[in-house]
Image (tube, rainbow, N blue to C red; front, top):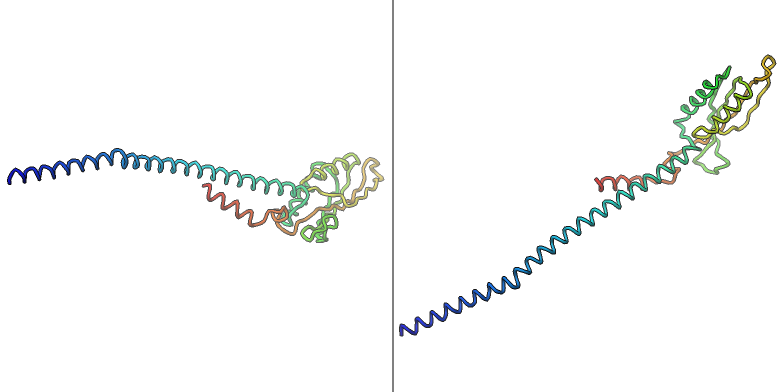
Length: 210
């Protein structure tokens, strides 16, 4: 009876040992490689996500730079022809500086804000304002002044002018000019077609890219 019990327990022991080795084999051959593959996939997924985030960030920076460049280009183009009302005093000062550099005599300048709608642009957002200028100078110097005004930014247009030869100085004359300038009634950015939504989009991209 004792021998039978020993054989029984010995058989149970061998079965447990066999099950243990079977489970160990299953772990080593199936579960452990699966865990390693899972970790490897997670690592690759994290690397792919990092690369994707870098690509998205780069594209956002490129888009932001393109939008800012477009805004700057449009504003620069309009700045050549249109001035904002608050900068009219600067323009009058620049014209006075040109006259001072050309050393004209009896210089006088007066701005006239007519607010007349520009017939050439047919836009309610742009008006024509005028500046009256008078001075005495030589004919050659007068031509140089006209050239400087045409190269000014914004461009100053000569609406009309008159020049009367002086009795005491035949080579000089008394000049009267009516200058016209396009004045925007809205912000230059709005006139250039860049909406507030576009500027907000640039701000959002800047936050994301930081």
